[in-house]
Length: 463
Ligand SMILES: Cc1cc2nc3c(=O)[nH]c(=O)nc-3n(C[C@H](O)[C@H](O)[C@H](O)COP(=O)(O)OP(=O)(O)OC[C@H]3O[C@@H](n4cnc5c(N)ncnc54)[C@H](O)[C@@H]3O)c2cc1C
Ligand code: SF4
Image 1: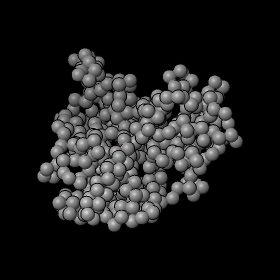
Image 2: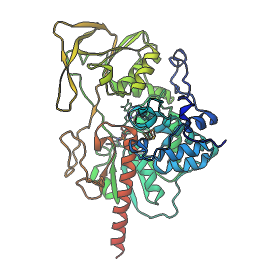
Image 3: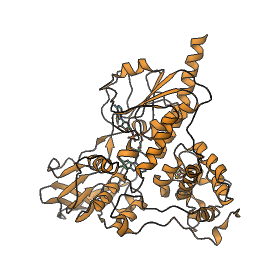
Image 4: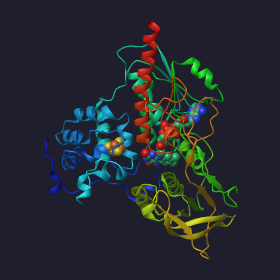
């Protein structure tokens, strides 16, 4: 049913319903239900169709949001999908896991004028799920085969977005990953309650159908030397992510009940995928997760679902200053997680985590107030399991001639080419731990540059 736009004055914002906290604590399924066609249309019709769309400006992909909202409101779903998929390789994934409150929805003019933002992420997911159901999402089959070969190291969102774009243009593409599955953190990091595994696997199948070649269980630099990889391909993209966990660096951090966040999450994700691997199991334990980012939120919510006796999240700043998505904090609280704000760990024993209270002191160079320990405020949280979730740095890379930043990320020019001719970099390994949507943006941009580079090389060879 076609609808008029600008309906925000009388239609209140409604996100899709969530499953109740009691129900979702019992499984790893996604917590948000889907929009119906009519609720997606209604919510889309709230859009103000701004002349300067701040939502698009603050979407890393520059998605044409007002246009696809207008098309959904008009019931023109196939066109909405065409517009949405023109700028985003995996819109149904971003619709689910982008921190929209910090990106598109946080910049919506309706949010700024206190009417409540348009539910952009949920509509984006609805458009692509409708497209899958209707058979509009098809493999990117190229019109011509160029007969060249691009090697991509890393099958996370950056590598896969580049693979799709390059294949669409007719390049031969091989993606290598050291894991036994493609998907990177989409498959082994982010839990199913945010992004069900079948959603990622569906995309990987489509890429395989388009002719992308996947080589799993192969670590470049260990199983295949980097020079050999360069010799195999006309261009190489490094999209290896960042995996070196930041250490706690306190007494007791090597005790057997202290685990790295990713080890914990990977074991649970493998179980969800049907692998018979041992779990790092929180059942019946008091769990303390140290950290305040997305990874910490995923760990606390995983522990709840595993049946922990209690789950606490220890973070050294306050709620307003935490890096994780506010929406995820509310989900965690609804599910029974207790947040211990303004507290930092001092040591870990077999009994628990000894911590100190903090206050926010003078702003540092970035303008953020630095947390300072309150003397004499020490307390102990009982813990049978401690999970360290302080974030990630790049692993050491020993590739001769590859320029790195002071933080160990790969330096590139504006076209994402590294200091090595024909070697490009994208995603977290280029920008540091970031977001899926930025990895997709980088992957698409790198594909464009690689296409230009390889085409010029082919033209030169033909002269
Ligand atoms: C627990 C967790 C939760 C997150 N939640 C969110 C979220 O909700 N929303 C969001 O937007 N972002 C989230 N992020 C961040 C997001 O997942 C990353 O920014 C994104 O996945 C980066 O994509 P990438 O392709 O650069 O790297 P990755 O996804 O890390 O993929 C890199 C791939 O390279 C492979 N690899 C590494 N080295 C080699 C090698 N030598 N040879 C072969 N293969 C190699 C790895 O196995 C991996 O598959 C989360 C991150 C974590 C850790
Ligand atoms: S990709 Fe992310 S930031 Fe962009 S419109 Fe979709 S949900 Fe918003």
